Amino acid sequence: MIVFENHVMKNHSNMKVGGVAKRFIYIEDKNELKEVFDKYENIFLIGNGTNTLIDDEELDITFVSLKKLDKVEEVAEGLVRVEAGLDFNKLISFMNLNNYTGLENLAGIPGSVGGLVYMNGGAYGSEIFDCIKEIEIFDDNHEIRTLKRDEVGFSYRHTEIQAKKWVIISATFEFKRGFDLQKVIDIQALRESKQPLDKPNLGSTFKNPSGDFSARLISEAGLKGTKIGGAQVSEKHPNFIVNDGTATFKDILNILATVKSTIKEKYNIQLEEEIIILKNKSR
Image (cartoon, rainbow, N blue to C red; front, side, top):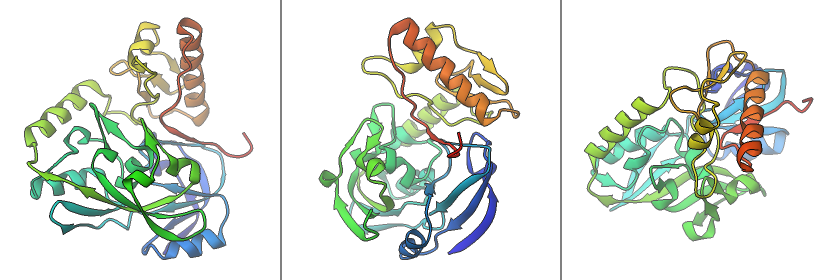
């Protein structure tokens, strides 16, 4: 493992906001997890930081990254084992090279495989659990074990992994042949046309309420372009909060609160964040 003390977290979040952490640890072998979790407290497992908002105060947290666990291999016909630290779009590239289909709708999501499994990430009617056969986890008893897909509770943008605070080590996917390259090209073009990818952001900020879309509600409520400090409700996609380069953690919290209170008042709908918000204990 590689350990850094007093580590600046700003560049570990796509929002480009973050304070100084007590320590940051890169895991190089899955068996190091037991040593880390036995030794340290206040551990937060961080993926690519694509949906994690980090407090910009001093953080009494030990961040753990599995980025160096990034192998992807075909273990049998149609079965692909992927370590949690692999960038998800490298998995899409592997599927293209090996003519596997099933996750094209998720192409362009800027996260790690472990991060997407953790929250059952998805897009355009597909979810990552659509193709999962089993996952390998480090559980709350500090043991490594494998769970079949039907042994894991999951739903829209949620898995029981979150509540039980398991660490995802790897996932084995079951694919069919027939990669749809045109679909990937179309979806990536759609993302570029509709999402503010030119500014720091954390992707979709709020989960869609049942039977509706957060972006539609936010737009209809007249919140597009609303700005607090350096944080703004995107003009391009109202379910994205963007950073103009000067936003503080407080600016972003305030704009989240403004959106939620406005939608609650206008439509009696309580929006729920899709992003992870990591606060200093003092707040």
